[in-house]
Length: 241
Length: 328
Image 1 (cartoon, chains in turn cyan, purple):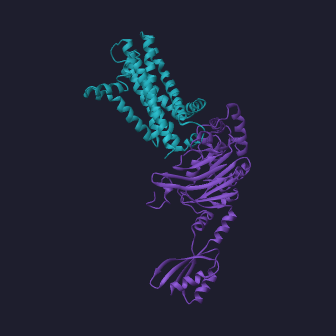
Image 2: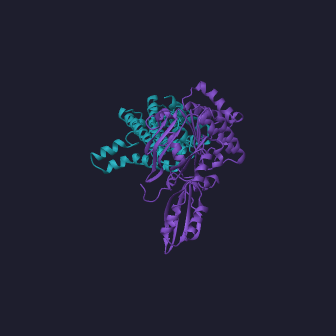
Image 3: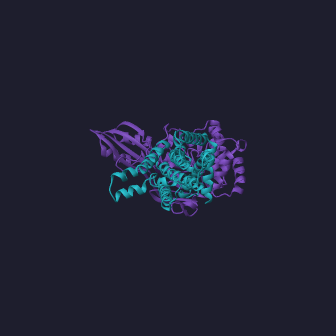
């Protein structure tokens, strides 16, 4: 765990020491603010719970996009600049490299998500919201963001450069996002399968409404584990090439 | 310290290195000499446990570099051809990170960083961002990260690459200063750069070691390897017999025939061209042309000695280019 912490702290520090971290965070917060005012609030009067649900709905999109942007550099940049040689020649296991990099990016992503707390607090000033609803929504955002970040880490392990990495990751996330559409045009048991792997529709919506299901938590944690496991295997295979 | 046996690495269907065998003793400074694409970087990456070999074994301090890679990595300091530097970090922070990554505790890391900076002349730029450093300083930081954890084996892949003449001299002096503290393996495609620093040279070409020894031993070896081509006209049998009769001739082979003209290659222990020419004329064979046949080693060595190398760095796939088409 010492190596994981070391790599994670360096990764987190890289976001704060370079412009890219601030640019990504600024664009994310700006997007969330604009989406809230333009879309979530709406023109007519709405119940606070509905506004909060809309806030989580739109913020989840921005979270997914930002997590892909954050993750694209994790390993692809190291390969491009040759710094992967430092990690590869050190007594560090490949799973520690993947986990350390992922956790570093995850902490930055979660800090970005927590920075949007001012929006629900604004709703609280003018309306009434349940703390449970708020906690469930943020838990959903963090799990959804963590999952797309893990998929992005896998894409970054495969891609030779950052552009390829984000394309691969975006394709994978899009497939999982659109799985519910396939569920509508297929019959059982395929429809059930596609629905169960749908990244957003099936698993995030309950969080957005303030409902926590164990199956949704298990789905996101499973997706994170599988993606990071695959990324580790890709990194190990790189030594054979 | 290092025992390499039958080391082979394929990139796809192309062999970057084939059946390498060599030993390096503890405390030795060994130069790994070869043109770009000869297989130097691939070999060094395998020794540093960055790459896995297709076959063969590498033992470092009695540990297998494949099965016990984790342990071996702790004993090695590796400077790749491009220094692995994080531009957004300061020199001090980066070296501390590199030290801790190699198992040095956070408390000891500061002391080790200070020692490494002292050795490599980086004390003044400890707080500088790496992105703000010149190429020469970046190379020094690369060297410092390789030695900050005091490894027993230092592997430096073209440490003077891209440096100006003054920086080359500085880097050479830095490396000389490391003698005695580490076993050093240094690669280069320019003989003059490493011949003054190294105890022994390994010459690699086409993924195979074509010569090994000190610089003077290699030079002697080449002088002895006398091969000469004779283009003649007349009786092939008589020419062959009279050449074989000259003392010192090892073998005579027919290289080419065209009508009554033919070319013979004479292999001998020394340069016997004057004696061979007199023997041929004495036997009544017409001597049309005579010249030294460039041996593989000689051509490689001369190119290296002249610093002659392709301008572009090859990719990994290109590194196997010397492999003849159709080979496995």
